Length: 169
Image 1: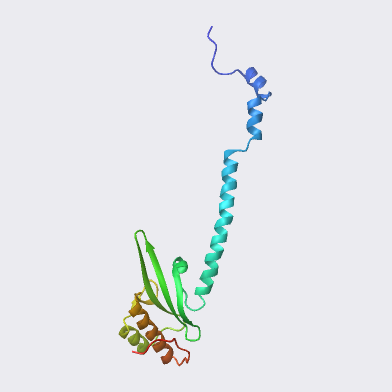
Image 2: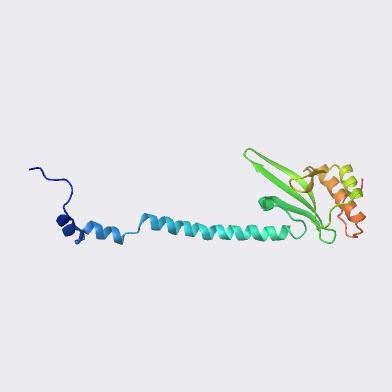
């Protein structure tokens, strides 16, 4: 008579009650899943430190103008006037194979430019970017001077005495 490949209930009861040395060794060794969970928790604490730095930078930038959080690490303030609600920044955009920079003139939420100020910004060569809610131009030495002139012009129109030192035209 051929013996069945499945265990009978009696055989299963006998072997289940006895622990084999291989079974006890596997219980003492660290589980692969436990290691992965510990590694992910460790990465989570590292990410929270990175996020805290991003939040700190975001707070610094939102003091004058409310900006989208995705670009904060690439913004460099050139000039800030909190009283006028105006900020001149340089932004780096990095894509594989190239790096582009541009200048941004940002107004605070409650202090949008008047008609005369927008005319001045157009005359200086700045263009309004709807996505960023900022006046932009490519970053060159000549454009930096033009942007500083525009910054000073807006400050003058708003009655602020403090200005950037820029060579006269």
